[in-house]
Image (cartoon, rainbow, N blue to C red; front, side, top):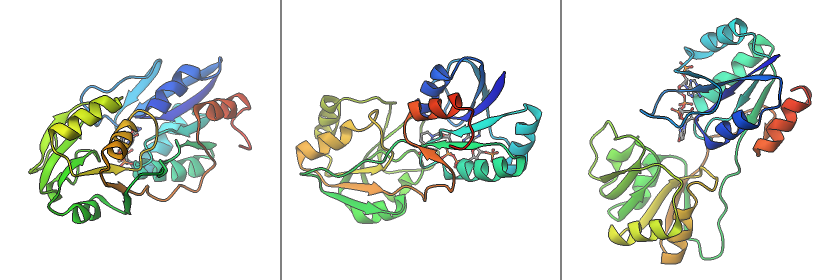
Length: 237
Ligand code: NAP
């Protein structure tokens, strides 16, 4: 039986664990960042590996035949580690990344490279910040939505919630908090896209944090393409 390590923490990684071809042992790996993560089906390990060296040792100890990096597009450290460790251990790697979002007619988006730059663009306006629990101290007014409470002080009101979200729910939230600008990462995907539709309908500007550079590794953008890669034997993709 082949062993595949899926670096997860995303809906796509959970879907991949469900759809993996028969005869595959899938080990799903989570960082252990959120207090009660949604767990994939099957075997799960939780916690960091201890850098590139730790990941190489893990790949060897578990006799991993292939790695699929299905982590969030902004989780760039684990992705860099996966590229380096699979090269060192001689294990094939596939990156599964959902496409980013694209502007539509009526959108008023400003692209920035970091959360700090997003906060500078927002200035004193009431923001709806959806970039996670880090860097919230830089925003002056508004509301942030996070899965777990932020560790650092912030002037923002915190809403603890986890997607998926509806357009009606997002419209209600933005109106209730008198939001003047939405701040998001270019995470992509359907689970959290409703806020962009709501901002368009309300005519609100959106500040979008660009993704980190794509890794130098074979990449697909759907779970089905990753399943195909596994079915074909994880070689030459
Ligand atoms: P990161 O900055 O790229 O990684 C930091 C460290 O966390 C890594 O060096 C690694 O520790 C450990 N790690 C990260 N993902 C791991 C995984 N799937 N399995 C085992 N160890 C992992 O990652 P992050 O941005 O903090 O994201 C952490 C997790 O949350 C990822 O699984 C990601 O898919 C998920 N997530 C992230 C975001 C986001 O916006 N960043 C959003 C939604 C979900 P060692 O070096 O010790 O191995």
